[in-house]
Length: 258
Ligand SMILES: CC(C)=CCC/C(C)=C/CC/C(C)=C/COP(=O)(O)O
Image (cartoon, rainbow, N blue to C red; front, side, top):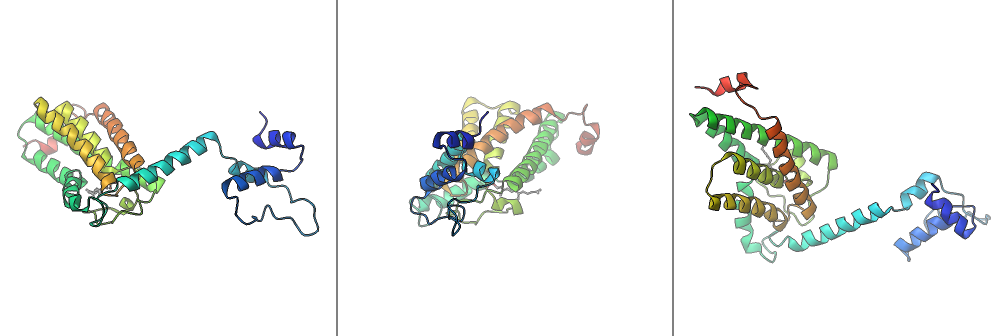
């Protein structure tokens, strides 16, 4: 397949890659000063040809353009939706409520609550469900920490870093740990707790509100939250696949049997 550079060369009749570079630079910043690669050497009539890899970097693919446009829209919309990002923001007075919602989806109360329930449970069915919930919550923490550490996307600039108990990777925003936990816990509860319909609706609403509040608080961009929800949803399938039972993990269950 001919490379984009070679087809351009055929059209212009030029043997050098200079025109390719010029067109891209002028599209991006028409008023920008000459870059080193555009500058002619004194006394020479043409710039030295660019290495192939430089041209490829400057030649944005359709996917690249689509992704950067999506990210630009994401940053812009997330900033506009960050209406509780500070006390002085448009909905700054709702910030304390948003922070309560934030704590309701935080890892510490969920881990402590599940652990406490496990210690108090007196039926083997409850122990099995709570042990798997604990496993799911820990798996979620590890997975989110790994992805945050790999992607290293900084939190939005309008975020005030005043969160309740964080770990080092929480300076990064992709994906939202609250969103993964909300989706995971929501699926888990709907599947393993016998609840009346209004309560099931409340659980789904809680997960949605926790997720939306991440953007409103300015903690995350929308894509962090959307990916977090997908990740948490998928993680539940993994947990169900690896379901711990007295048969598959007898030693673990022996620890909790009174
Ligand atoms: C047992 C253990 C290691 C507990 C750590 C619990 C903990 C500090 C979880 C972090 C929860 C948190 C602040 C997540 C960040 O959520 P985002 O939605 O802002 O990504």
